[in-house]
Image 1: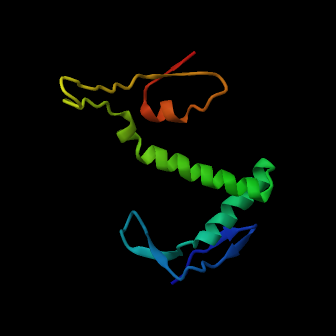
Image 2 (image 1 turned 90 degrees about the vertical axis):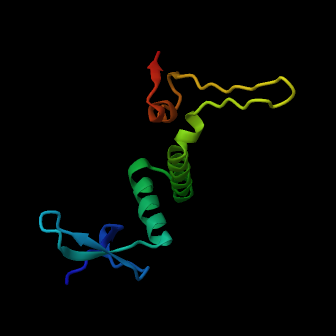
Length: 124
């Protein structure tokens, strides 16, 4: 069975993780070929090289961009917790506390990722 390969630095590359996942034909449901899972080093090399080549960043800055992208994904995965309001009662004697989330207004030059992920943004 023919295996798929990674494309890193302009040439095909076999996966070094030793693990493969199935690729199914959606029309028939049959497995067509396996695709190698990338190791952490392969992902870092592929993404960092892409950022370096297309955005003109040095390699260390490109790795920082990858780390920042992972932080954004982590934020997006937990956005539901950050959006909810809370109403803890009886925090102290006859004291209630409330936390209400308000929609965000975008300011030019600021990141739009969080308000757009929340689905509630106003453009100024």
